[in-house]
Amino acid sequence: MNNTWVSIDECHSKFYDLEKLGIDTPWPMDTFEYEFKLLPAVSRDTLKGFLHNTIPEGFSILALHAKASVLLEQATVYAATTSQLQQVPSDTSSIHEFERLEALIEQMKGHFPLLDETGLTSSEEETLLITKMMVHAATIKLHLPSVVRNGTLSLQQALSAATKIVILTRDFQPSHSIHVDPIVGVVWTTACEALIREVLRTASHPARHNSSEGQTLLHTLSSHMTRVSHNNEFLSKVPPFALAVIDLTNPLDFLLKRIRTRYPAIPQW
Image (cartoon, rainbow, N blue to C red; front, top):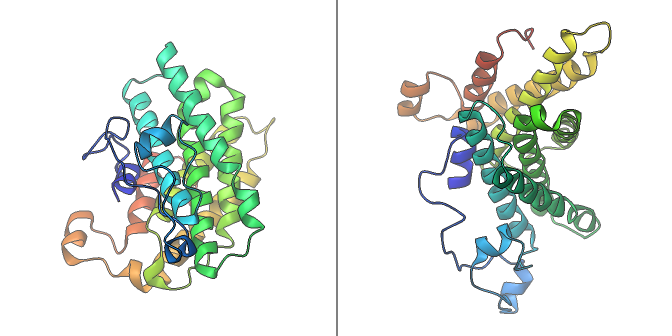
């Protein structure tokens, strides 16, 4: 939950520092492992071991989902720190942090082809799909602020991740409204921001670029966000006190309004 709120607020954690917090609770295991009372091989420094790639544990669907939320949180904090500095830091520590997070994200992506070949339940497939989208969103969060420093490479990485989120979104059909993971709103918003930047960039050079593909992907995402939020019974039931604060009909509208406010030059989509 903390990782989700950090991703929404786009700021540092209000509760703890993942790097310094000593969490020994093991990663969640597969159901059959609990049924056979199999204990995890390691139960110490769970988050530190993952973030520093020293303890290779936790490969169940739920564990990967939890790890993906950690990566998204870490990439969000990196992006927020960079934004506050008004420029991409070029010091050694910042570059090391960027490379460390990028390596963890790419390593996580390497697990997906193997999982796609295993027999998963519909619920596990849904969780894996959201996990994939979170990891791609982490790529966007990490690379967008680094476009100035890394140029075309970071831009291509962010756009590729946004495109993959759109492709995965087409398969997103939650089995029940109550099971919708709220992080999908953050993921879609993150992808929209990458696509908006590309549309605006290509629009400023019409002779050299064609922005139609970016506009099509952006329209696909925004339409899906609107459809899910309006048709989903769970998302549409916003508490009255929340409406008094954000003055919106549902959570996804809040995220849509955010990116439209940030990018007023974008055509209506």
